[in-house]
Image (cartoon, rainbow, N blue to C red):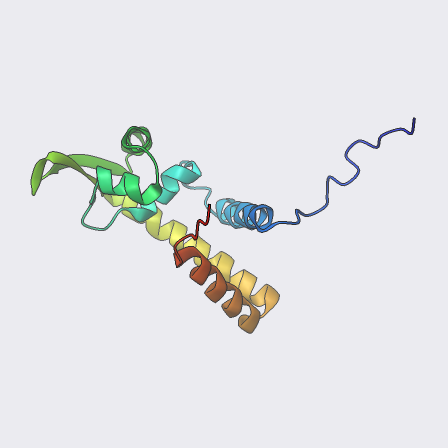
Length: 153
C-alpha cells in the first residue's frame, strides 16, 4: 500500500468562491488590524454591529434582523460592546417596550477609525491590481451582496 502524503496540498487555494471570499476577508482584517493597535480588539460580529448602528441609534430587534441573528445573540454582542464603552442601551422614546442601541463617542470614534483603516486597505488593493480591475471587482461584489438570494430548493 503506498504511503499517504499528509498535507500534500495544504497550501492550495480553495476552488470555490466561499473559500476565496474567506481568505480575502482574513487579509482585509489582518491588514486593518495591523494598523489598529490602539483599540481594544473586537470580534468580527462586534465590529459589524458597531458599524451597522445608525447615528440616531437602532432598535435591538431591527439590528438583530439586519445581522440575521437572534435577539438573544444580539444581546450578548451588545453586552460586550457596553462593557467596552462602545455603545449604550436606552429605552426607545417612540416605543417604551423597545430598546435603542446607540454608539457612544468612543464607539463613533472607533467606527470612524476602522472605516479609515479599511479605506487604506482598499487604496492599497486598488494600487496592487489596478484601478479598473478593482472598480470592476468592487462593482460585481456590490451587485452580488445586494441581490436577494435565489433559492430554488
